[in-house]
Length: 266
Image (cartoon, rainbow, N blue to C red; front, side, top):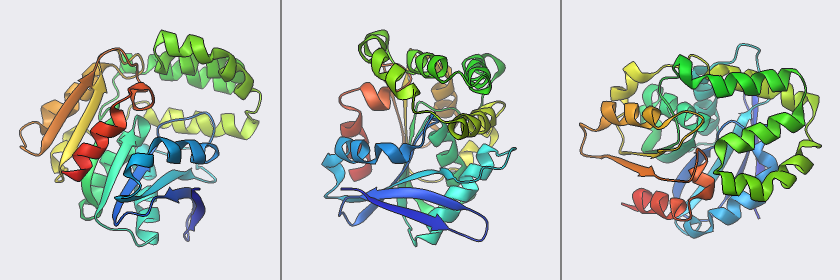
């Protein structure tokens, strides 16, 4: 069973959960979600069961009491502060989607913390054409239309067959969305618009694996390719592109966690 915890500093509180008994440390920073990742602690632990003998895994939520103008840079600095507060060091970080953006910020601003970096379906530079899906989600959240938001969110991040199989589930879970959930979502999603850390990518010093998807309907495969173009001069950079699994390949590709594990154990 995952252990639920909370980091409290002078400036913020941040929930996290941990599992595994390994001597190595893996930090997972999940992507943008409509509801907190804390409710999925058991599911996440089960999905990463293979690595639990080698790693102790920490999964961080976003901070509580979000400032209205909360940037990705701010998220990275807060998550780094949480990592330091727990006394963690030489950590491997896996960041998915927005979590990958946060992970890049940590690797750039706090290189002493990061031993290895895995970036899943993410972007270092959100261009105007990559903002359309996000802007639609933000408008639905502002309208307090949790049903449409969940349906559109799932339709964009999953392949059609996965969405069709689970759309009734998304309908049911949307009924549990609160006004606070939607307000947090607007702040977190808005932070992605205009994010650009591409000029600092060469400051990443640790071995890095970027995993993208050719049919990424949210951020586009070009986002992963731009990261690769900035880092592929280094022999310790690796790139893998999936076909057919959608933006959330980290949830849908059956060998994703095996690929992650193999890189982390190298």
